[in-house]
Image (cartoon, rainbow, N blue to C red; front, side, top):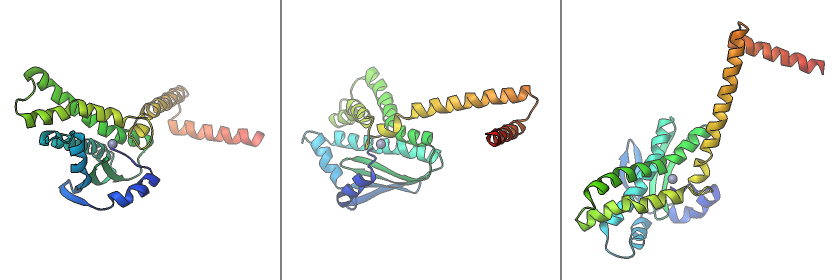
Length: 214
Ligand SMILES: [Zn+2]
């Protein structure tokens, strides 16, 4: 959820370097829970006994990180692990993504949360809130607190996901422009009866000649 800078990570290192329980492995990726999570869940729940709400918050954070992990995997990058901590979660991954891939990974968390919101609000709107208080708390966590956390994560500066997510639109626009430019070049090459390779070679030779003349 939070993507900490190097200095932030060093600062947090002391607190979050240990104290984890490995909950389970998902496709070989360890999912770990930090001791601070139960504490924060209780505080977030207003110190009341609300196990449904606690579980709900935990599942929201887990799903957010799984959203990141989904895109990491999709782009052939390496998932190292998911940590759930009192300050959110951390999807640890490695690889060399393109700027567009990096931005999609950043969107992954929030997109997963929006899917959860949508698949929850529809049955609630039709059937109403569940009668059992614990189930009602769980459903409640999937709605407005979930949406609040998603919005919070889109704050457009580090360490929030927004810092890497919002540039996606700029990257896509630049890619679109570059593709249009190449399309025009290919059409021109076709008109001249040249293959793209021949045209590229001719442009390179023209460019070299121009440099020699100056
Ligand atoms: Zn995130």
